[in-house]
Amino acid sequence: MQHTRSSLPALSLSRIARLFEEAVNEVLVDSLGLEVTLKEVLIDKTPAESLEVTVIIGLTGDIEGNVFYTFSSEAAAAISEHAGLEPPEGTKEDRVRVSLLCEVANMISGRATVGFERFNRECRLTPPAIIEGRAVRMSTLGQDKIVLPFGVDTHPFVIHVAIKS
Image (cartoon, rainbow, N blue to C red; front, side, top):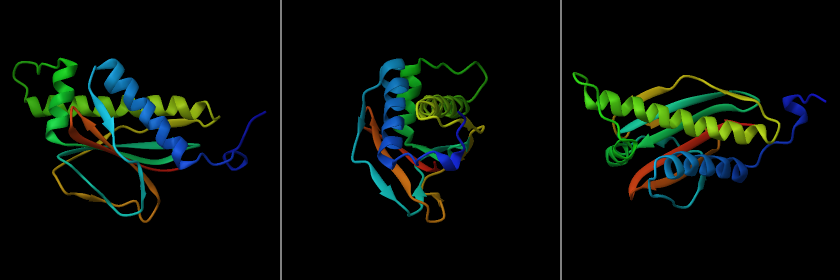
């Protein structure tokens, strides 16, 4: 029996938060060996504020919206170091680091979409968009968003999930 989006019950915000928390643990802890802590998960409508680098991944399908991954420069450096990433000769380290953060955001989003499939939700990812610079305000136009404030080796890394299920 095929479901339409309107025939499926909405996923709770707490379940969506858990799917992203699990995905972060699979990618950053299990794969890269980072120490990651999650502080209190919040539900918020106010604009998200960026840290030094923000990666935005769009979600389409039965789950629609955006996921904002905001990294402090220290968290970005810790992820790069644990990934063992050495920039190719002649390239700027910042470009390689931003590329790695896009890949990490894609991997976390991808793992979360696998979780959505357990609840009969199909979801596709859009290519990442990058914002560089601190204190950029990103609005979800009053839509509820889940805020997951992590620490990567004690450095801030925050995921803002603004989606409709």
